[in-house]
Each structure stands twice: as C-alpha cells, then as structure tokens.
Length: 236
Image (cartoon, rainbow, N blue to C red; front, side, top):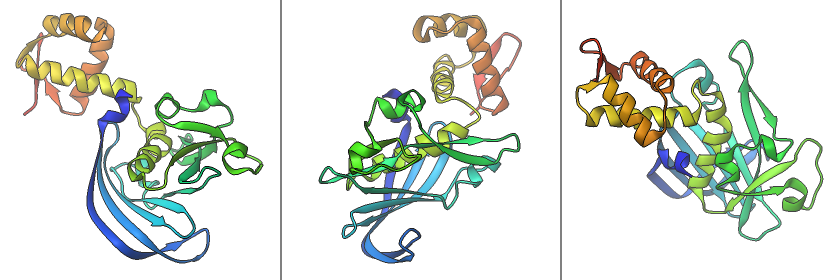
C-alpha cells in the first residue's frame, strides 16, 4: 500500500543478548534487542526498541522517542506486545486504535468490526478473529493481525498505524497528497499558481479547492512561501 511506503525504517543497533523488564510477567526477560530509527511521512521521527523473547514466543515494541506535541508525548514509553498464535512462527496483536477526547488526552479502543480496521492494516496484513488466532474467547477482544516472529518492521508499522496515525492532526491520505504537491512545486521552481492547479489536476486528480487546502497547509508549516502574488516557491 502506498501509504506504508512513506514509513522509512532503519536499524541502528542490534544486541544478540540483552535484558528488559516484562510488565505483563513482572520479571526480567532475556533475548534479542534491536533499535530502529523511523521517519514516518505523516507523524515525524521516532525511535523504537524491539525485544524478542524466543522462549515465550513474544515480541515487544516500545516507543522510546516520539515526535513533539501533546498527543504524541502520551505515546512515549508506550508498548505493543505481540504474542504466540495458533499458527507456528506467527505472532498476533489485538487491534486497538487510539483516539483523543476534547482535552487532547489519548485513549484506546478495540476494533469491534472489520469496518473499523484501517485500510492500511486490512490491505497489508492478515486479519483473523481473536478466537481463530488463539483458540480462546476473551470479552472485548475481537480482531488481531498476524506477523512473523522476527518481523520487526511490521511491528513498528502496526504501532504507527494503530497508535500514532489515528491521533495525527492530518489524515494520512491528505498528508500524502501534500508531499506529492510539494514535490510538484519544487519541480516547477518558482511556480505560477495556475500551473500548479493545472498540473495537480492532470497528475493528481485534485480540484482547485483541494489544491488551495494543501497549499495553505504547506504554508502554515513553512514549507512553501509566496514570493509574489500568484506564485509559490518551496522554502529552501
């Protein structure tokens, strides 16, 4: 899926043997630990720690550095746990999505139907019912994703899509279009607005109103400016 291609994941350190504290088991665990630097086109820069417990067949991902802002600050130190499923070599994650209340406090809720699961997940990962994946019934747990035991990158992507993307101030589809529009304006150098409208319509299928919304967003973030009336330019 095109949206997920906007997540750039780089491993920066690997420890074949290290320790961490498992909050669920309330004990120190030993296993492989890896650190990743992540640049997400939608939310910004992250630092993640992935801990793999081969004995209990469990993977834990922790956000150890988040982008700035009140919402993302509440995810710093947050963990997502992937546990052994009924399928050998596969771990599951119960799908739960974040949301914010009127005070910008972050909460989470379980996905109760497939319609609530974001397309970025349903189109890129295997979805099963909790009972099918675990052989158990648990009140409040409905759907899970399945990933390979050593698939660190999928763990990171699922953390971002389930925890970070839902509380972003901008929908991912809108952000992706703003990235494309920024590239278009850069190619045109000092771009005449009429040319931006025309090319964005031809290449991106955007109407004038949509282009104006994207330009306003890019201006607010200081990524483009208007050197003179009727023209826009990327800020170098």
